[in-house]
Structures are given as C-alpha cells and as structure tokens.
Length: 255
Picture 1 (cartoon, rainbow, N blue to C red):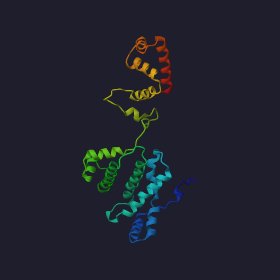
Picture 2: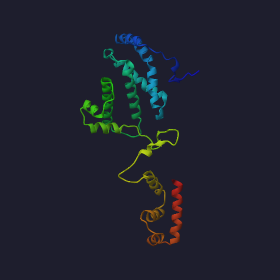
Picture 3: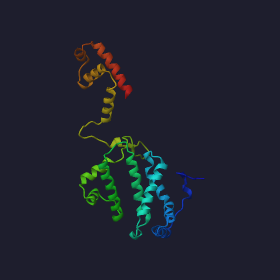
Picture 4: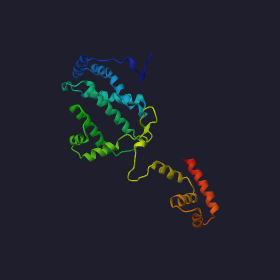
C-alpha cells in the first residue's frame, strides 16, 4: 500500500540518518571508506525526492530528474566540509537544485551560445556560494561583484537560460477564472491591446492566395471601398464582394 517506486527504488523504505550517524559516516568516508560514502548517499535520497517535486510541472520524466538529482547529491557528499558547522541538507539541497536546473536548461529548445551559458552557470555557482556563506538569497549586483563582471552581463546571461513558459500558463487562481501570463503582458510601445490577435491575423493572411490577400489588405488595412478595390484590381465590384466574403470565411476558419 502507498509504495512509490522511482528508478527501481522503493521510496517507502528509504533510510533516514541522524546527525550523529551522518558525522560518523563522513569521518569514515574521508578516511577512505567507500561503504560509508554509499550509506551517506542512500541515506539522503529523500532529499532528492523532496527537491524534484519542485520541477513536477516541467514535463520531465521523474526517473530522469531523480537520477540527475542524485548526481547533485553525490557532488555534495564528496565536497561537504564538516568544519563549516552546517547541516548536510542545507549544503546539499542547493547543489541538487542546481544540477536539476542545469539539466533542464541543457534540454531547452532555445539554443544559447556556450559562452553565455558558461557565464550563467558560473553566476548560479556564485549564487549558491553566497547563499551558503550569507544564509540568504543574494542580489544580482552581489553575484556580479563576486564574479568580477558587469551586472548587465550577468543579468543577460541569466535571462538567456531562463525556462520559457506559455502565455497561457496560469499564475493565479482563487477558485474562479484563472489569471494567465497573457493577462499580465502589455506592450506599451505598440499600444495594441489585442496584439496576440494581430499575430494570429498575420498567420491567417499567409494562408490566402495573392488576390484574396490583396483585397483584404486594401479593404481592411488601407480602408478602401469595394468599388475602389474593383477599379484598382480591374474586376467588378460583385467579384470583389464574393472574393472578400470567401477570404473572410477562410480567416475565421483558420483563427
């Protein structure tokens, strides 16, 4: 009952280690005991499970994400310093999160140049180091100062690797109609309230033939009458009316 398996691991039977057990195992691991290393990793797999739940809405295979998180856990175990007087979970969680984010960004459909991605990854490492050192989330200018880079370069790199989201991603729902990202986006420079409809119209126009496209442009974008369009194209006003009606039907069907 209630057994959940991930990567063949029965999560209901994962061990839990006390702080004293952890300290003892770390001392043994640092002395070269490989079995102690394995016990530390298996005893902290619940950390990986708790972290990967944050990425449930990314559409990623849970087994793949769990394995990636385990890599972060192994790195944390191999680099943890008992002398820092910090709980292992406090040190390991940012490492696991960083490994998961790196995996998701590398699979991002938007391709970012290697140099920009390297700057972004170094910024994330600097951020994790500052969190460990200060115990709080650093500001971008603090990360830039740590890296000895201009703030603009760090912001640009981090924005470049940000995960894209849908305009129809819900960001708030109080039980009624949800608020989507689209509702919060506004282009003050353009001034068009329904700019997404403009994009749809342009795509729909591309599906018309050249004559239909010309008639629609003259009638609805240039503001010409059917008679003026007929004179310009060299056909009757009745033909313009018929072609216009057919073109509008195509547009409505497409949209």
